[in-house]
Image (cartoon, rainbow, N blue to C red; front, side, top):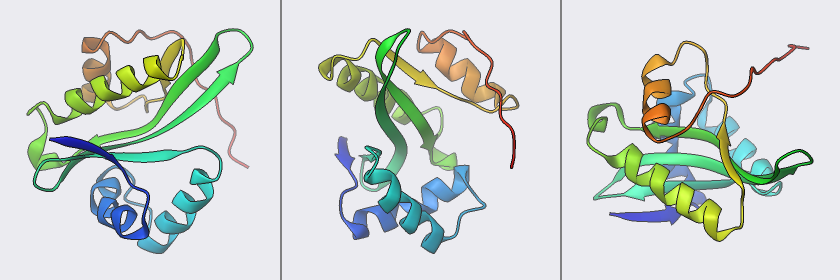
Length: 138
């Protein structure tokens, strides 16, 4: 198993089928365009390769006045047929170690209220529910 950063268009394109499991509303063209724009803002698309892409995550480092530097997990998904086999946990642990190496104080993420299985996974990884996320669609 290896963790890789999707830096080239081919790598990013190869990540699309798995990302599409989590974000089914995206087309390949939209995905490629957004990833390019997000990368310019510090986003990294990382994936776990074990004879194919088994899990991936979108991460970005930011900073807040009240908590300091943090790593935000914007997406984290494991292929449906490979869930509960340790791939997501391995990738999450890599992200946590990377955040430590980058001198972050926290790993943060936002998860939809209906994703109960994901919430259980995050809590089992030591994360705590500490805020409510609000949005306003414009």
